[in-house]
Length: 266
Image (tube, rainbow, N blue to C red):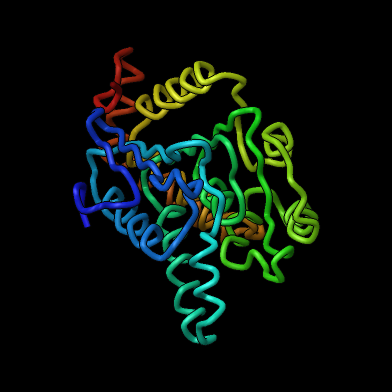
């Protein structure tokens, strides 16, 4: 699948270095179904391979970012075998993993509602900005289910204690609450404020070396929760040594010493 082949998402890369992916099922609040998951999987993989893209923005068309699972899809799942349900869930997990592992900086712009899997998308992005009146909820237990597939990304974002509380209560919370627990990083009161925050993040991204951004994300993925010991120290020393010897590292140091902008800065 590429550009024109997408039915349930929009893909726009007309701005240099920026890809915008828009969930495009506004009539059902951008709820997930198998086709939407497949299209997101494809576009995340495609963007990951494009070295010219340095930032990916994820947003939702219409009144909501994403209301989670589509009711028709869930009804169909309830008639499937355990094996079919497992295969379905694996596809969702793989989509979120592709988003989580993208080398580019990823930014979620969240409004309306972000429920269940929609909140999972938010958790899998590097940075999230939410409109103040956005509603969040992990509602699975109300349906006799659990947020199993999204749980690694949510726990990573907000920690086990908050995850436990919100998973077992299915409490609805707003953007200020989401910011307090770490699910989002910034709260915007108006659309103009959200646009200003988006541009601020973009300026920061384009001032950074793209390879260093990808490697910095990998540092967090590889070292989070690790015991701080001699072995970890050696591993981190190898990482910084490789960066210092890289073309980006040499260019960055030279630009700093020569008081000029590095070649990657836009």
